[in-house]
Length: 458
Image (tube, rainbow, N blue to C red; front, side, top):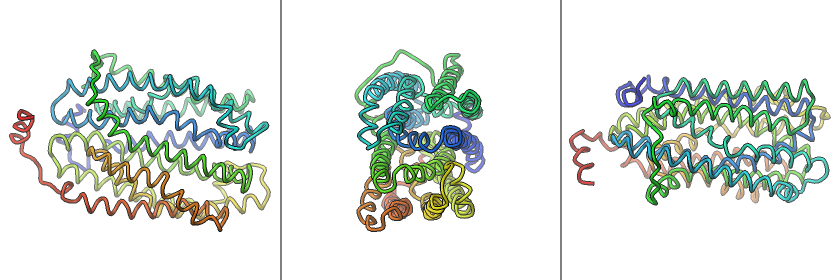
């Protein structure tokens, strides 16, 4: 469906299902591959390789953080400009964002490749553990200039109404990554570098296929001669800052937790933490797919002054996030041992008992996690980056670090409780932000002539 008609005229509940269900399916496919990635590494390469992947993963995500800042940060003003009927400016932001992402990927990839050995040693790893983590990190770095754009292109396709095509690409990418990794690890018996290589191949293919509609000029966003200006760059950075800070702060927290876990429990503790993160890597993308897929529609209607539609769409987002988190609580609580054994192989009864205990405490995270997640998405979609950034940094860094100190006497139990405590504090903060923003969020719809006059005056 043509994107303007889809975002402006489709009933909110119907629009939610049209936009969010494919988005959730797309992220579910990515999340399933994330699970299979962890399972393949743990089952075919062993516990040391699995721990090495989890030690390197925060740096891999940091590598994507700058591209994510630009991709998410550009999507918000693009959607709002389209709602304000400024197609030319929207296409310029799109073109400049693509150029910036490719450049940022080259710079961060080069830096990560050079710094990989030192970064891993800094984490306290040595021997084969450190060697495997370094190799994994460096293979990701080689693919950085092209793979970092894949998720931004997903946003741009959805803005243009190519929702099913975006879903198809995500499913195809996940299948290629999983199939390639299975062949390389399970059949050929290659080492940890092949796990990263499989990701690079699948993501490169998806990025190239995502460009086709834009190169054929079949989309509302089109490549044009780029016109960079400071106001546009500031706007992109401001809107992308919450996602960027969440990535960076979250990875800093992961690095800190990994360093603590290496010293408190060695590879076993890191492996348990890795299993928890793989579970979270399944739940969070599904929530992200349901909520973030609405961002183009929310931004479009916010720019068009149709605030009642924005509120209706966001109600759907909150309900969906709550349902997803409730399901996660039930599944993790019911099958903690089964989930642990998917990732941790060859462990003793004591190891599996510790993992089971950690899983049960971790499940409590999702009792309240949906509140802050949906609120942050809401604030970002309506171009309120400050509020979104406060939630983001508090959730990813401030609350976890404070709770590390408060729960330190509990040892590893304190680490496993950290996640649920952080989610509860973030939910309380989000409620305060929503209450303070209530006058802005509850404003009446603008009439078309009023908005046209405002555009002329501006």
